[in-house]
Image 1 (tube, rainbow, N blue to C red):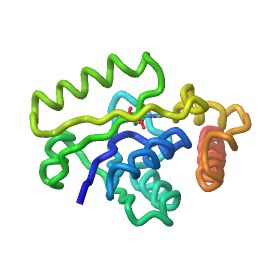
Image 2 (cartoon, helix red, strand yellow):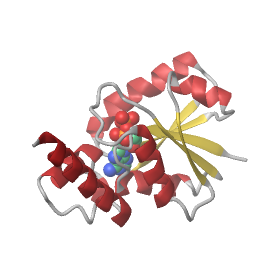
Image 3 (cartoon, rainbow, N blue to C red):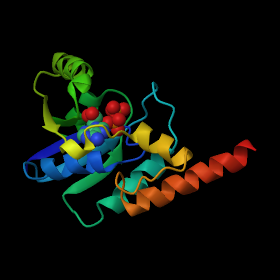
Length: 165
Ligand code: ADP
């Protein structure tokens, strides 16, 4: 069975991420979304919350599994017996970082390849941080995330505001 790992922070998952998963599903029978903690990013949702939200989004697709990992991605891939990593590309600005990561991962585990999918043009400027920021400012995010994520974002931002004041 052709399987691939799609790693990321997914804080939260957006329509851009979903677009990449759906494209990848044409090539892979299983796409394993692997949620991780990125120390460079200050997360809004806890890891378990992010996982549960993604599970809700893909509840209808048995070919999409969701898990978390810590440590090196290539180690996780090797123990999971998966040789392909999926990443999404939005604009040229993603390229430098993604190229560096892909070559580093290849250096660490030469048998593992990274496959890039171009996002739909309408999501090319979309990021989780943009969606988080828009929610805080009470902007309309309905075009950017599924309904369940929109609801969770609003609740989380409200909860944070209550705690702050
Ligand atoms: P990370 O912290 O690993 O960058 P992200 O959740 O921000 O985690 O992104 C995971 C992957 O999804 C990355 O390859 C990123 O480029 C891609 N991605 C993020 N947003 C979009 C989008 N709007 N369209 C396509 N790919 C995206």
